[in-house]
Length: 260
Image 1 (tube, rainbow, N blue to C red):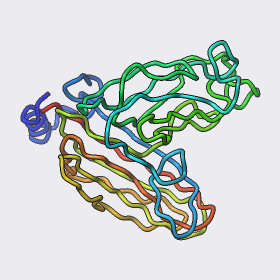
Image 2 (image 1 turned 90 degrees about the horizontal axis):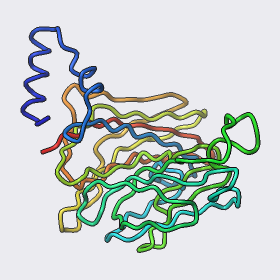
Image 3 (image 1 turned 180 degrees about the vertical axis):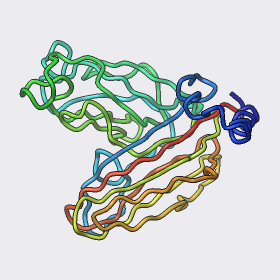
């Protein structure tokens, strides 16, 4: 679906009121147009502004592509173990194009990645619901995907989550992204501030730019744009949080990706 075709459909819907574009879009996603829903959660420390991801610290974006090694701090997360046995990772290759791969715990990817923005458990050794038993249906320990170029974590799955909680994404090469909505939520009686940051990767040293800011005090603050924000390929998008010691803050954003 091209941007022109999307515009035609939305205009027809607006004029005639008979086509629910978003319903049709959700039911007919393909490589030409698809949605991205990113969500994360952090516990904040006073004076620190950090990206919203499972590492709960600053996040290092690699400059070059390299392999990824996936490990767990629990021995039961392993091939043949009672916890997570394999994961699927989603990211971008050296050309900033989409790729994904299934990898066993304790092993290293075949492909190289310059970005990784999602990881989830594919196979586990048990099928109990996470709150029923100690041996659960996803990961028992903390699973870490380490980028071997930076030697730093690039994605983490916390125990019993089964997938990453990271409000971080990079627009693939060949696509344009429309941001329709973003929100943040603070669960404690403290002030906190949520930010939307973006950075282009087009061959020069680009800055991180603040594209949205929301103040919170034990509430949820969101923004849905009637006219969506438009971001080009190879743009990093992050929700960042600044709060007080021990604040638990979550956030999400929604994108529509359209092939150029």
